[in-house]
Image (cartoon, helix red, strand yellow):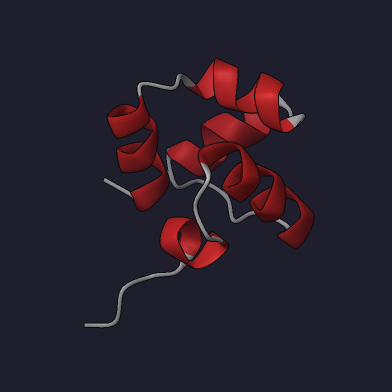
Length: 64
């Protein structure tokens, strides 16, 4: 499970609500949640603002 999906589950926010609140398309939100796409910087900022997290907390891969 990716970090964005974990955060949405923990905050009880749907993909639809994320898309509407952040002002992004539902297809974009769905692709990000399911790991099928990478966000543009502007999109990442919008999502981080809505979720009250840093971009790094949501989208940066953990080093192994």
